[in-house]
Image (cartoon, rainbow, N blue to C red; front, side):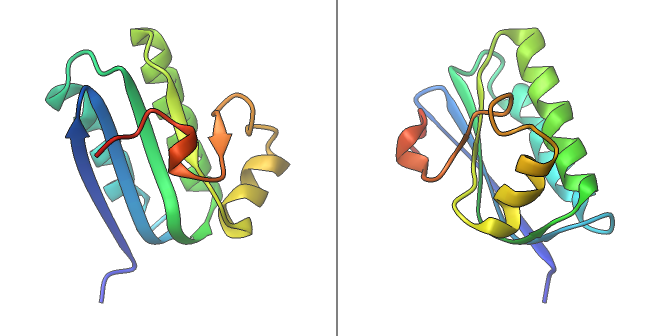
Length: 115
């Protein structure tokens, strides 16, 4: 059993990274790697959506990766959206004051996500 599974789908110029499980210092590398690959697969995406609906735990290491992805997207002029419907993900982002900066929404329908 994996502690974290991360998928990457691209459709209509929107890249969607979907994570399920626990994002902590032992698993965060997989999330970081998928987010880094987004711009290799889609050089100019309309948006990047990180769907954390299936995440049960988000540690500070995961918050840092999301912030790094936000900065990388910002350098390219691409919006980054974070789907965080549950408290396990939303609370760490709220405590860090990042819900507005990272465009945190409760459901994928509130983003550009199509895949």
